Amino acid sequence: MSTFRAPLLLLALVLGAGSAHAQLDESAPPPAPVRFRGEELFRILAPMQGVPPEKRAVNVQARVERLAAGSDEVLEQIHTVEVGGLSGVMAADLVVVGFGAADAQLAGKPRQVLAKEAAERLHAALARDFAARSAKALGRSVLIAVGLTLGLLLLLRVLSRGVRPLERRVRERLDARLARARGKGHLLSLMRADRILLGGLTLARRLLTLGLLVTWVVLVLGLFPWTRGFARASAARLSAAAAWVVAGIASYLPNLFYIAVAALVTWGLLRMVRLASNEVQAGRLTLPRFYPEWAEPTYNIARFFALALFAVVIYPFLPGSGSPAFQGVSVFLGLVLSLGSTAAIANVVAGVVITYMRPFRVSDSIKVGDSMGVVVEKTLLVVRLRTLEGMEITVPNSAILQGQLENFTAATRGTGGLVIETSVTIGYDVPWRTVERLLLTAARRTPDLLESPEPVVWQVGLEDFYVRHTLRVAVKAAQRRKEILAALNRSVLDAFFEAGVEIMSPHYVSARDGNLAAIPPEQRPAGPVRAFRLQQVEAEPARDAARAETSEPRRLEPAAASEPH
Figure 1 (cartoon, rainbow, N blue to C red):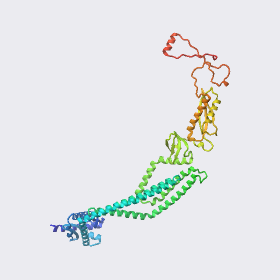
Figure 2: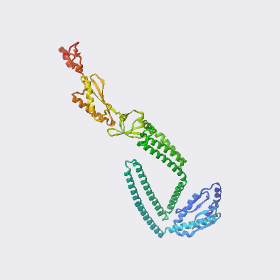
Figure 3: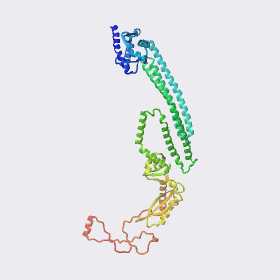
Figure 4: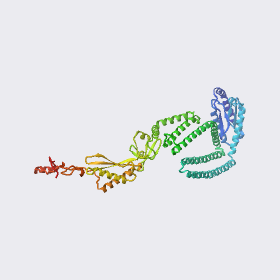
C-alpha cells in the first residue's frame, strides 16, 4: 500500500503546481522557514495548491516531529522521489516535503537540487537528535549542566565579594568627604554624588548578575534536545536585541554629540550664574539696586529658562522624537500640565512678584490673614511660617499676594523698633499725671525695651466712668513681642500696687446722696454739688400687701432740689 501512497500524494501536489505559477505572478508571499529543535533546515518559498508557504512549513515541521518521535531506523529510509513536475523527500512511506517549479524559480536552483539538499539536512538534523537523546549523551549533558551551575555560583560569589568591598570602600571615602564638607555649603551635592556613584555600582553588579543568569539558562537548555529549540530561539532574540542596541547607539552617536555639546554649554552657563549668585548672596559682589536676597531666586529663574531652552534645543535629536507615539505623549503631558497646574502657575508667578517686592525676609515675624509666625522658608510656591506654639503653617504665595500682610520685623531694621502698647482704665478720682508717671516707671523697669524712641503715655479715651491710658514702647526683637508685652504688664501691676493705686474701671450703678464728685480734690470746685436725696415712701397697708405679692421693688423719688448731707 505504501508503494502507491507516495506517488498519489506527489501527483496531487503536481496538480496544484499550475496554480502556484499563477499565484507567483500575482503576489509573492514571504518564505517560511522549516525549523527543528530551533535549527532551520530549509525554506518553503512558494505556495502550492492554494496553501501559502507558512502553512506548508507548519505541515512539514509536524511531519519532521513525527519522524523524530520514532526510532533511528528512519535515517536509512530518507530519500528523494520524482513524480511528474514535482521533486519530494520521503522517509519510509511518509512524504515529508515536495518542491515544484515555483520553488525552483524563486530559489534559482533546480527542484531536484532543492529536494536533495533538504533530504541531507533532514538526515543530519535527525541523526544529531537521536544521538543527543542517547543515554551516554544525556549523561554527558547532565554533567556539563552541573559544571555550568557550579561555575555560575562561583562567578556570582566572586562578583559579590569583589563589588561589595568596592562599594564599602567608596562609601567610606565619601563619608570622609562629607564629614569635611559639613558647614561649607557642599554637603547636598556630595550626598547626591554619593547616591549616584553607589547606585551606578549597584546597577552594574545587578546587570552582570542578570547577564550571567541568562547565559547559564541558554547554555543549560541548549544541552538537551527537548529544550534546545527554545534555547536557540532565545539566544537568537537576545543577539538580535543586542545587535539592535549596538546599531542604534552607533547610528545615534552624531545626535549624541550635539546633545553633549548643548549640555556642556548649558552647564557652563549655569555654573557661571551660580558663582555670581553665591558672591552676591555672600556680599562679596554688589550690584546697583540688586539686593542679596534676590540672588537665589534669580538663579532659580535663570536655571529654569536655561533648562527649558536646553530641552527645546535637544528635542529634535532625541531618539524617536519624530514618532507619532512620542508626539502623542508630548501632547498628553502638555494637556495635563495646562489643566492641572493653573493654581501652581499662579503661585509661581505670585512667588516671583513677592520675591522682587521684598515685603518680608526669612526669619521675619509676619501675619498673613489669621496666620502669624516667623518665616522659616520662602519658595516659588509657598511660604512656611512657624508659630509661637511650634506649629508650621504653609501659606500659598497667591494668598499672600491677594491678601493683607503685616511685617512686625520690618520696623526693627535700622534705628527704629516695633511699637507695642498696653492700656489701663483708671477712674476720674486718680490724677492722670500720677497714672502717666506709674506707667513710665513700669516701662523703665521692663527689660528689652528700646530707649529711643522713648516710651510715651497717651490718654486715648474719656469714658463715662474712667479714663483710658495707653502706654506705647518700642522693642527690637519682634519675635519676642508677646513675651516682652507680658513682662511689661507685670511691671505695670507692680508699679501701681506699690503706689497704692487700684487698677479698676469703676461703674456707678447706685444713686448718690451727697457723695463727693469723682474729681481730684485739688480740682474739685467749692460750693454745693448736685446730688440725689433718698426718701422713704410711706404706703397704705393694702398697697403694701399687693406690692409684696408682686415683689415690685421700692421706688426712689428724687428731690426737686437739695443740699448734700
